[in-house]
Amino acid sequence: MNATTDKTWEHAGLGLFITLGGLLLLLTIAAGTGIGEMSISIETTFAAMTNKIGWSAVALNPIQESVIWDYRLSRALVGACCGAGLAVSGAVLQSLLRNPLAEPYVLGISAGASTGAVSIIILGVGVGTVTLSAGAFVGAFVAFAFVALLSHGARGGASKTILAGVAASQLFNALTSYVVTTSGNAQQTRDVMFWLLGSFGGVRWPEFQLILIVVVIGFLICMYFASALDAFAFGDDAAASLGIPVNIVRIALFATTALMTATIVSMVGSIGFVGLVVPHGARFIVGHNHIRLLPTCMVAGGIFMVLADITSRVVLPQQVLPIGVVTALVGVPAFSIILYRAKSTT
Amino acid sequence: MSIRAENLVWSVGKIRIIDGVSLSVRPGKVLGVLGPNGSGKSSLLRLLAGLRRPAGGQVFLEERDLRTIGRGALARRMALVEQQATTEANVRVRDVVSLGRIPHRSPFSGWSQGDEAAVNAALDRVGMRERAHRTWHSLSGGERQRVHLARALAQAPRELLLDEPTNHLDIQHQIALLKLVGELALTTIVALHDINHAAMFCDQLLILDGGRLVAQGTPEAVLSEALMRQVFRVEARIESSPHHGRPHIHYMI
Image 1 (tube, one colour):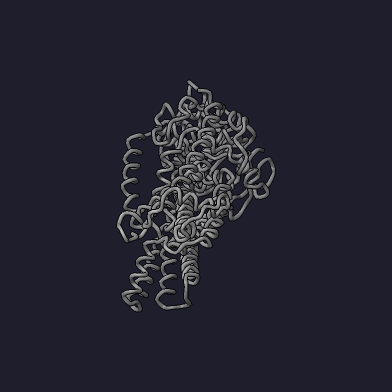
Image 2 (cartoon, helix red, strand yellow):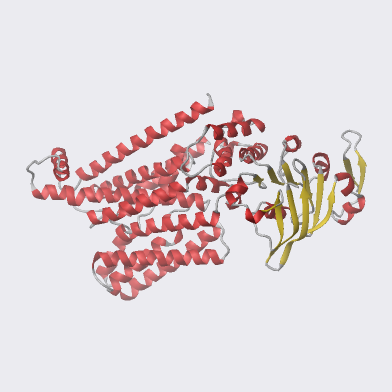
């Protein structure tokens, strides 16, 4: 086949793929809105949405309408954004650190956020979800700064950064355990556990606005550096010899992923596995080129998270599983299949 | 002079890796850098490529100070092939060679006809066009080095730096790669291990020992039995080869 038509086909294929993925994401979000504890018919769900947008004025049960619009739709949209942000962050960090095990929490962000949030819950500094999120956010950035300083002091290098991240995670997890065991009562400990495993309970429209802005801006910054990320495949010197300002790109992308992850963690807790698994799955489908990989991660991460959230709500009657439990339970088998198939095809 | 360096010094901690090295290469010529392990060959290439900042001395490209040339502008005129650079990512050959076009493109600009032509020409030059769709992990060592060379050529450089490009290759691929490099009309600096290969394929040789410059000149002028003894610690006899006319080294045991 002629190489130019090859490239054109690739572009057309990518456009089609992203469009299909986007439609699938919309369908998943619609499913996330329709499915739940209170069974609401598809017609009602649809009418509730068009009512709110202003396309229709069907008289509905106000409780059902409110559940659809204020509770489920905002929750599904936040879930999609979180999944997208975590998957994009994971893909970026795996390429930047040249390590397939890298994920958004590798820089100690989740551990730091936990320490921040737990301090707020247990030490009772301030009240309400706003201060809780703020505490988590501050904790996340303290941990990130710690890792950045430590790996910079150790004269850079991808493996040094990962080691610094491991050290930070251990430190902040230990601090969290310390605070919980010395000052927590049983109820607080249970709250903390639930938060550590992640939960979409309590997210509404204001959260969606914030997370949408953060994830979209983060994604655009990562896309700006897409070809720089390609250049990192053969190491820092190879990237530098291609004219990439290695240190600037690394700092910009670390900061971007840290900001996205910290916002997500402070909002919904630390949801594991999405940032690790989705990029590998996406690479298996579209290859390593970041201009294709990052949009795919965005869409696939969103779908994965909304599906995981639906599962967490329906698998046990009268009960919501922590989302982190579901992402791992669904993610590990999916990951195993990818690993196995990737091995047999290369 | 295409590439010129004056009195380069570079240290790691208190250890001087490069200690007062000066060199010059004329346009289109091949300079071979020789020296025992740890003599500073790779470090010298990194200084010349602008990847490390020398503690002392200067590098000039066509009499222009390297420090005044921007990163991107430098990548558009000088390419580096590292020693055995590899990746965990299972990228395709065409994608690796396409990396060479990064310095010629801006972040959101599309893939142009010119980029496509440069990548195809580079793939043709190293004989990897038919294997452009192959994945990195399915390639042999020789194929990988050729892909790296193609990536460097896709940068459309005027200066090419190669760090021991023939390491771990079988003899057929060593000769083929060096022949290919010699046929390119680029100013080339290549670090090599095999002194006979260097004598055959390089216009000029530069000998390093412990980060210091021992000699620079034509293979005939530089290679001597005394040098082999002093720098490489071997007994050798050198004669002009009746087959290719270049110096040939026989090692004595």
